Length: 468
Image (tube, rainbow, N blue to C red; front, side, top):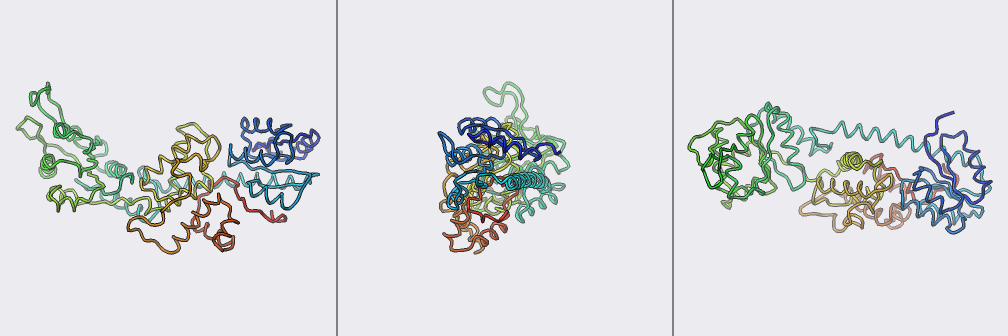
């Protein structure tokens, strides 16, 4: 006999029925637990977290449909099979629309019960296999801490590989949250100076009066409080890399000294006439348009051309939406481990909502959303109510942003995801709204390629009774 792999909780106020279920499933690969009432069943569900729940529809104090709602509210990944002596097609449809996996009549057909349980065990095994494949895929498309397989991000990876062994200065351009610092770290790690320091300086956070002393250092007595010599960031990073984040915020007075570092490989400490030789690589990053700043006299033209000899443009998350599943998988694994939770993924409706979002904050916004989801989640999967509040409702105005133009097919997919999010994954209802067949919806979803960690049995549309 196989070792039981899944927990099954049977809830029924008739002891004989509980005994029948236990005996019928003795040879199956499930651990059977029982509860004599809905209240006790809900307590044991919270305690045991079973993947399968078999519940009578008529229970004292709380009916099976109410129990179904409360169980799915606790864990949207649970598979609930309802059993009743008062079977009807309408009640079966209603139960499945509310999220039940199956609906069985009494007296129980033992073979049908076993078949239903075996289907669920098989689905779970398949999900585990595909989950491992997803993790392998994340590893396969991970490059120096960055993850993606879209053409835009693969082009960035290729540029980094070609540039890293040779560059002295590089300019990384991209919107806030796209991962510019990760690009800088990748350039450093693949450069000949990878064993030396990688030093970060956020130009927008440095106080202008102290900026030069932080970057270039100072000598004793250079100003009040300068009690001893201090090396600056460039000297400290000698042999390695300096990452100048938000270079567009650097004052013109400091820009001229930075130009000297690039031209002559030397720095001059505040209060000292003696130049000091340094061997550093410089990666500058900005979300601003430096060309426009040069035209307005806000940024030195000669410095811009020195920095932009090598230029890397990092795409927004909206430009690489196909990377969403990989990034979601990566961040779920990361924050589930940090918060010490067993979280397998996101529900379909949560994924649909994330896919419909415009992501103005890019990868950083996605990471924050998944981090919050993992923190708030007390189930096996992250659902809509675990996400930040702005992501819990239907997407608003996400179809076009700025000068974004997409294909008609992409617009159809986005609208489908919005409708599915609105009807909480009910494909039958979505088909009615869109005026298309359910098979068309399935074909479109296969093109969108939701990842296999979609672990929730929330197929709320009714299934034909004879189809298994």
